Length: 206
Image (cartoon, rainbow, N blue to C red; front, top):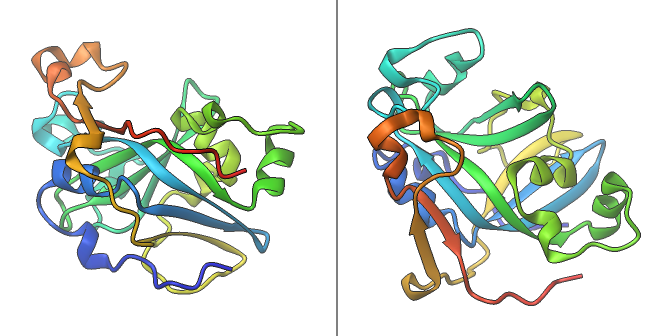
């Protein structure tokens, strides 16, 4: 059972979504689904800078039933379906009415390996199983219904998502920044180096 406190809301409500995306590398993302706890070390993120970012769902102050969650105070989940199939997990940041968010794109599976193998229908996990936002939600059991969940509650409830700082050091020399994936429609904003990858060789933990 993870025992450290979850990241406080103050971590998420800071104004610089790009800095938060970088600092999320090395943090551990946990879920409790039907009392089954799984988790992984975050190794890839993408920042989305709200109303001024053409790649963001909230660009130009766009507000819909789906994106309204992005306008909440930072520290909650924004989960949406990609191509109507794969739920993608994002973390809302900044203050209320400033719709910043960070997409979690990659994890290194850490905790609850047998549960994750069952969710993937595999007898063995390999490192690339944690690459890609659709794979993350499959491994961790995250669904669209979890959109809006508070990430800053220190309780391992039947249904919960939270992040912990477990003292994993991510050096700047080990981080690659590059343009985000699949946002060519965003014009010049597609070239922004808002994608962060921890490129250190990590030994599989399973």
